[in-house]
Image 1 (tube, rainbow, N blue to C red):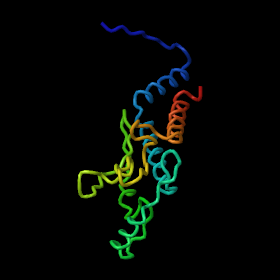
Image 2: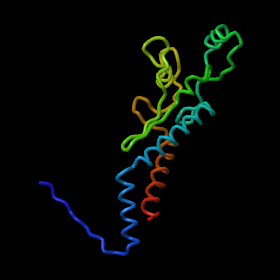
Image 3: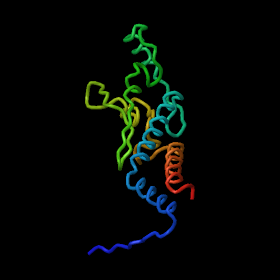
Length: 166
């Protein structure tokens, strides 16, 4: 049998209203989850602009053979840059959130086989250096320090708003 502790607040109407507001917000954290997803998506967009991974290290440049291949294929039509040759991968960046999750990802962009192009860049291959987009360490599943700091800041702002900075 479950046991519960019941606390009745007999304080001012202002205190009771404040407590009820905090409880409502904590019971429905979708607003926080949406803010976390949006903040992380913006961080990934910034990485595309700066061409760096989540640790701040610059993405490895394309190999000369890859540049040559693209030049032959494109015949001067495409003017993209590193990880943005066609713009499809960056354009597929999306985020979603719900009451108990926040996620950021890219729609599956296949290379014609089983592998998605963002995954190949995130992890690297035998022939291609890793150009991290989402994770500082894909094997450990860890975020970069800046992303952790941004998410911590967002969570703190949510809690400050709920509890009035107390």
